[in-house]
Length: 178
Image 1 (cartoon, one colour):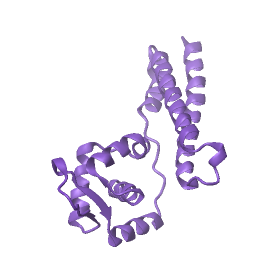
Image 2 (cartoon, rainbow, N blue to C red; image 1 turned 135 degrees about the horizontal axis):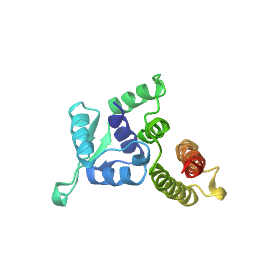
Image 3 (tube, rainbow, N blue to C red; image 1 turned 30 degrees about the vertical axis):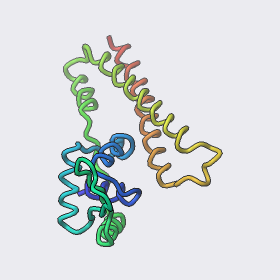
Image 4 (cartoon, one colour; image 1 turned 45 degrees about the vertical axis):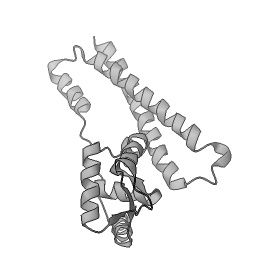
């Protein structure tokens, strides 16, 4: 149920076309709630059918049939209701952790290279998040920025810092086990 809410959020931030939404998902929301372009377009249709969003009227015809959408009052109410709901944390389900557990019983041959690869991926993601923070939330404008959006980014940074630290330790243990 969260994809429609992610789309409603993005449209409340800025009315957009489907193409603009997919690009915004690729640059921001997609870091913590991913969706394919097809899923986004399909969900736009459902939201419009449910009268939660509508196509913005155009004074002149738009080339290529590009449709821009905005959120209707019912869509805002739906999103506000969803924000107020209680949701339990999701349990961790990570194949890398399961593989490490399996390695404890069948041996860890070759797993150290995979952990080093994951470590490099998490380091790269951490640097990307830090670059977004430097660009979008500079210290000299911190009081003026949207603190809630910054908190989402900080959660991503904290998670990547955790993974870098944990994978560094795990790679060391796996390297010592060889």
